[in-house]
Length: 158
Image (tube, rainbow, N blue to C red; front, top):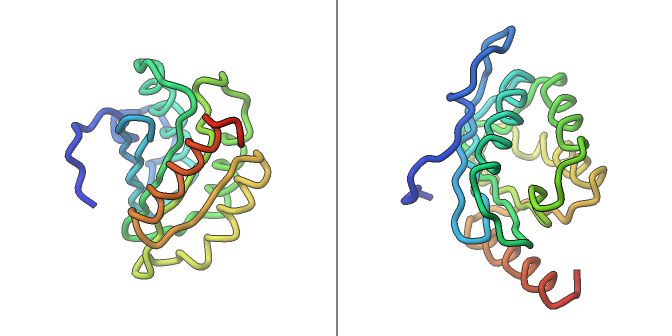
């Protein structure tokens, strides 16, 4: 996937972590889908940066509810144990309803290092927060799924 929209938010714009963040997450909005491009491997510090970058970015938007998110992983899906723990903690924190995606898909192609290893960890995070979640192998599959989730929610089915 190539990003045609201008870069709007990124973990690279956030400083102040004790240790250097490993990994990078960029984000931008396309209609009712928040798109992330996450290049791993990841440590806890990159998720701390993500929490700040995401809230800064979402705070600048007027978001039509419901909306969904798609995260495309690049290079590696691997996270340190404290990294996946931090991601879980951050995802469990309460957020204003209009700043909470109603469904999330991850695009993890077969070429992504650690994709199969990390899949159950990512699934556990989204099960804990009770958000519909799907891992897809292509962007087209992810887009079809999140748009179906959004339409079902708008129709009162989700």
